[in-house]
Structure formats: structure tokens, C-alpha cells
Length: 203
Ligand SMILES: [Cu+2]
Image (cartoon, rainbow, N blue to C red; front, side, top):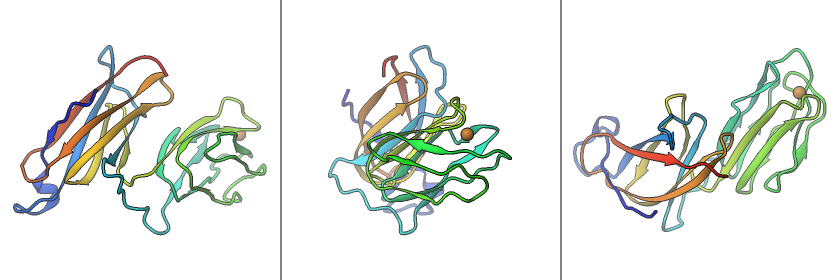
């Protein structure tokens, strides 16, 4: 499905009425039945392959609260350090067997765990050695333009420079197929662009 959309930017957010060279792209993600899909990830990769590197010192946080990872789904750019504070009064031991990043922390509480650097693209599934029900997903991507959908199924990619992109949408916890499509960003117009994405069952 390689439909190309013409996308117009939101001038109010960009602060200029002339020569606007970027746009925000809001994606409405839902399943085949029309229900919004929360915790889906979307990311935009320039078709030229020239995505900028992560900003120096890029970091993200995955907390542990009431024996759950918060957030359960993360998306970060390769080269990001992820911190794992533990807000529970019990100790956790986090692990990943995923090829993109294999690691185990000691059993720890508070902020004792060293941050983990996610340098390779791919999907990392996190678990806890003590609590089998704990699970989280970390998507590691090669672009700074990414977002996660809220309960309303909306994810917004901010300030996409003009150009053509491959937009990938994935919903790791809902057994929905990953979907890719092309989008053409042109920030010279006005208004807010919304793109509707229907994910099909599968994996
Ligand atoms: Cu645990």
C-alpha cells in the first residue's frame, strides 16, 4: 500500500506564514473494527535514508510501578540511553533476550540500575526475573521522528521536514500487523494533516 498523501502543515505551530518547510502529522490509528489502538508506535523515515542522528545525550526512562513497566511501550532512536528507575518498594531484575539488546540487571531497588544504551535498531521485549507478568516493548528506530498513540489512538509526528517518508505503524501488544505506507510532507499549506491508519489482525 504505497499511496502518497499530500500533507499540509500547521502554521500556528511553526510560527511563520512563508516558506514553511516542516509539518506535524497526526495519525489516527484504529483496528479493523474501528476501535482506537492505544500504545501503537509510528515512525517516519526519509526515503532518502538520511535521517539525522539522535541528539547528544538522548535518554529515555522506563519506570516500574505496581509491578508494571511504565510505559509498557516505548520508542527511542538508536543511540539512546534508557534509565530504569524502580518506584516500587520491592526489588526487580530486568532482562532482555532480544537480539537488538541482550542484558540483565541485578536485583535492585530505587535508582541502583545503570542505564542501558540501545544502539541497534529492532524490537526489545523486557521482562522481570522475579515477576513473570511484567512485560514491556522498546522499539529502537533509526530516525528522530516517532510517536506513540494515546488512548484515543492518535499519535503525532512533530515537525517533519518537507520531503517523502516511509511511515511505519506497529502495535506490539495487540497482535496487529505492522504496516508501512508512503507520505509526502509539504509544510507550505495550512491546516492540520490527519492520516487514518487501519491495522489488520496478524503479527
Ligand atoms: Cu519484578
